[in-house]
Structure formats: C-alpha cells, structure tokens
Length: 397
Image (cartoon, rainbow, N blue to C red; front, top):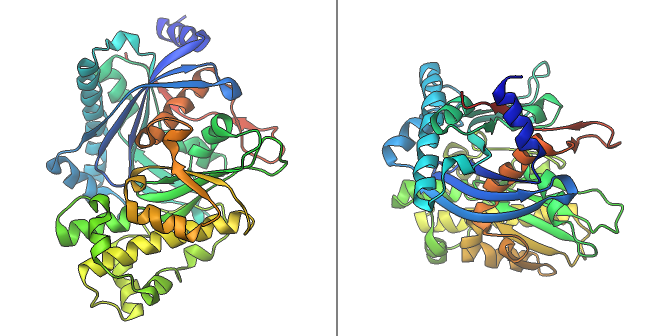
C-alpha cells in the first residue's frame, strides 16, 4: 500500500484529530486560521477550538486578488498564477502561525482549506439553462500540502454543486449536528461579506432545518467605507451613527429581484457591488446622498433584508434565540437594528453556545474535513438515502 494512503487510513481511524481550518472570505481582509481538536464524527462530534488567529493580507497582495474576484472578465494568466501563489502563501502563513503557537507541524493531522472564492454563479444568477450551478475557489490544496508537509483537504464546495446544490452556504450541515437544541428553536446567523443563517428547529420538532443566504452582509458597507473614507470597515458603526437612513432608498434597494426569490438561495459580490449600488441609487433619485448617509442607509438595508428573510422562514410570533457570528457581530448599529426589527428574538453572540464567533467559518471547514476523513456523509435529499462528503484530498508528497 502507498504509505501516504496508509497514513490517511490511520488518521481516519483515530478517535480524535487535530485539524487546522482556514477561511478567506469575500472581504479579502485576510486568512482565518483555527486550530481545532475534533473528537468523533457526525452527531457524536465534539469540537475544541484550541487557538485562532486572523492574519491580514498586505495591500499589495489584496490588489491582484481584487482584480480577479467577482468580476465577469479577468486575465486567465492572473487566475492561473494566483491559484498556485495563494496556496503557497497560505502554506507560509500556516507555518508562521504554528511556530508562533509553539505547535510542531507533525502534530497536525490535516489542513482544511476553504480557498478564496473568485466567482459564484448559481443557475438562478447566470440564467443559462444548459449550465449547472457553479462556484470557483482558488488556493491550490496541493501547494498547501507540499509547502507545509501536512495532508490537506480543499475545494469543498464543488461536490455540493455536482450534486445539484449551489455550493453555499455550507455551515448548515455542521450547525445541524452541533447546535440543534432539545427544546429551543434557534437561528444561527453569520454576517460576513454575504449574510446567511441556519434555522434549527428543536430535536422534538418534525420541521426541517433551513440554510440560506439573505443578501449583502458587510460587503456593501465595507466597500463604501473604503471608497469614501479609505477604511476597511465601519469600526463600531461610527460612520453609520453619523449618517441618516433614507427609508425610500432602502425600499428601492430591496426591490431587487433577488429578495423576492424563494429560499434557500445564494448570492455574492458578483451581484451586490458598488456598481449595483450606483444603479439602485439612480433609480431612487438618491445619487446625492452624503457618504455618511449612504453608509447608514446600506447598514439599515443589510439589517432589514436579514430580518425579513428570517421572518419569512419562521412564524411571525416566533420567540427564537438568534446567535450571531462573523464581522457583523462587532457592528453595534447593525446589531441594534436587528433587535429592533426582530423584537421577539433573543439576540446574542454565537460565543454563548459555541466559541469565538470570528472563528466559526474556519471551524466549519475543519469539521467538514473531519467528516471527509471519518464521517458517514451528509444527506442532500428529502429521503435521507443519498449522502455525500465534501473536499478533495492532497497528499504532502
């Protein structure tokens, strides 16, 4: 037997595995690195987040990534080169971080790399009947494995699209097995560049869990703040606090056809970007909004589209618990408006039922890798008879 295959078998047989989860989101702000100890698999999974860090990308590194991300046309040479370069770069960041933590790379069983999404194209978005759902992440797993000497699992979203899904959101598979409560109805909301949530009915219910994107999370706010204030994000919502929400403009923003599609659904910056904002402002006759008013209006738009999608999913009088992760949890203006719009919900940080809310997505992919190694797969149809696992395996040599 190939010794690498034999080692893979040994890792799969272990009662627990040490896995590094990686996440680089649509904001292109940096790489989340989560060191996880994962015991068991499936419904018997137990996760311990041992360490977490976000390493910021240098501006000189962000620029070429932005040139090829969520744009309809890009240089194939740049895509090809950055696919390999990003894998090598992530490998270097992993080794640097392990050294800082005092962890030897031989202690790590596996790296789980999400990669960098450069384009997301569900059928409902590209509208080409002969083409499937599609999504593309770069940051080659073979380069990460070779650079670090650690088994790497990557490219998780492709199996989902191959099986007829849209390739996102992936969190629901893990949310359901880890965070379903015996009696409590829960919403697990992640506000990253795009906002998404998982609705978790209690164990005692016959209702099915639902996972969906709601629309923009931080992406439009961040890009507007960068354009007008040269800041990466609206720290503590300070700019939004100075601005005034233009309700008529929010109404026009929400008129986009995406918000009238049934859930579950997905989207990305391919649709919701500054060009889209300019187009909607023109429709609203609001092109003269001050920068502060625009940030406040976009923040309110994010809050309302999240809240309205949640209300569509649950009964109007629901008294569910809502736990928030992602960068949006740090924006007090956004969080205050969510509470105003969802008065029956107890809104709290995901930390109160899990771990560091900034680490959640990186941990999700660590657990998906654990399932690839030792799990039985995830059900993707209503019968529960068909299951799949996610990710492609790259050996270090």
